[in-house]
Every structure is written in structure tokens, then in C-alpha cells.
Amino acid sequence: MPDVKRPFDITLLSMFFQHQDMNVLDAIKKRVAVRHYESKPIPEADLKTLAWAAHKAPTGGNTPYRRVLIVNDKETVEMIRKVSPGFLSNAPAVVLIYTDLDVAYKGLGKLGRDTLSMIDAGAAAENVALAALELGLGTCFTKSYSEVGVKEILGIPENYRTEIMLQVGYPAKNAPPPLKAKPGGRITYLNYHGNRWE
Amino acid sequence: MNEDELRSKLFDLTLFFLTAARGCVDEPQIYGPLRLIDGLSRVLQIQNITGVNDPFLLSLKKEIDEKKYVVMASEEKFIKFIDELIKKSVGELKKRSRKS
Image (cartoon, rainbow over all chains, first blue to last red; front, side, top):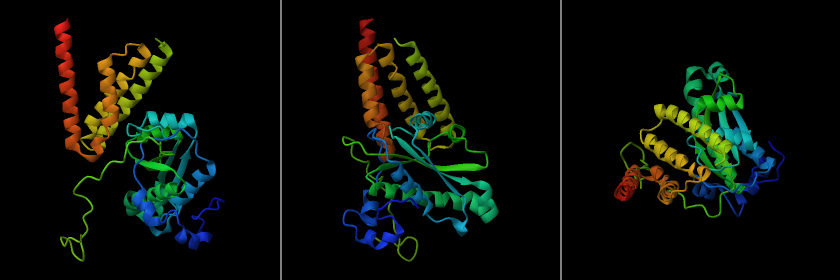
């Protein structure tokens, strides 16, 4: 865990729940995909906090297959952007969540390698997005990138699979409003499928 | 015209189209049109280097950059947006045809 005096420090858990500016529900409500950023660099301590938040997400069977790679080197971020058609912003940093496939398979078999590690990467990514809000940062989940290209740039060996990339930065002040959710989602049922719970 | 800058932009475009082509194999169908439209904006960006700066094409690029994200909210609106761009471009084509 990074040495930061923030509510995310587990020793300050009670303080977290009393935090006046942001609580978990607020953070969930405020999380949106940010596609316009300021060029201001992100302090390394904050990037470490994001990595810590990613690692706090669960892994199936407590199997240590998750890897987190933080990229804040300007030239490397630019190279990643160039092989990522879905990286449409000027974000100054990237958080990449990926999986050691050998560890996943050894620990949890095909289910771990092909399914659980991906689910857990999603949980880790959401942790990053929520922690980022606390730090005044915005994020954008990105999957439209070249797996081959990104692995080549970052020197990731063959037996790893990238799961999700988050663009990270301080949201631009003049950014357009976030997109509205598409209709037809947010369907909840109670007790059995089909019993809509409004 | 800055030849080095042009070379660099052409290389960037190469990477974009290559990786977009590979992405289209697995991505949702509507992302294909999105990549083409975004690619068009990137091609039009080259005007800045060549010094051509065609007002119509610049306005087209600006409109693409402002509205391309609508695809995330509504495929229908995105398709309408492309149709509008086509209508505008055909209007421009007619004007230019009359001139020549």
C-alpha cells in the first residue's frame, strides 16, 4: 500500500466512511468516461494509489494473477495512443491491468485463465476509476487498442494477456458534458427474472 | 510544408489504420464506421502541415471531432450524423462542380 495519508488507507477506514466530500455512492454516481484532459502530470504518489486500488480488487481463489502497469512516461503514453484507435484523448497517463496466464491457469484452470481473471480485471479497473475520483482525476476505460502493439511497446511477454486500459488525467475544465446512458439498460429484477423492480 | 512533420503524421496514420483494421475484426460493427470517420478527421489534420487549409474541410473536421462520440450514446444518431456530413459534402461537391 502506498504511503499516503488518504481515506483509502485501510487504517483510516472509519474516516473514509465519514468523509464529507466523497463517499462510495457519490463516487459511483460521479464516475463518467472522461475524454478531455489537462496536460498536467499526475504525482507519482497518486499513481501508486491507483495501482494499490487496482490490487485491492478481488481475484478468484485469491490467485495472484493480476498485474498492473502504470505508464506516465510521455513518449510511451504517446506510443500507446498511436496503436490504440480507442484512445481518443490527451490523457497523460495510462493504467494497464493484465493477467499472468500461467499463474491463472495453474491456480484456477481454464475458468481462471479465460473467465475469472477478466472479471477481476473489471473490478480492479472500477476500483481505479473510483480512487481516481477521490484524487481529482478522471478516467476512461479503453479496450480498443492493439493487443500486439501495446505488448510490444511495453515489453509484455507472450504468456500475459492485457485486459483493460484506463486513460487517466485531470479532467479538462471546458470538457463537453458526459454522454447519457443508452436507453434499455439498468434493468433490475426482484427474486426472479422478468419481475421488473423499478 | 514541413516534410519531417508530414512524414511523422503519415506514419501515425499508418499505425492508426493498421490497428483500427485489426480492431474491426473483434469490435462491434458500428466501430468500423467510427474508425473511418475518426480516420477521416486524422487525414484532414494533415492540412495544417501542408498549409492547404480548405475552409470546408476544416469545418468538416471540426464537426467530426465535436460529434463523433455520439456513437457511444446512440448508433442511430451517429448514422444520421454521417448522413448529414455526406449531405454537406455533396452540397459542397455541387458548388465545386459548378465552379470548374
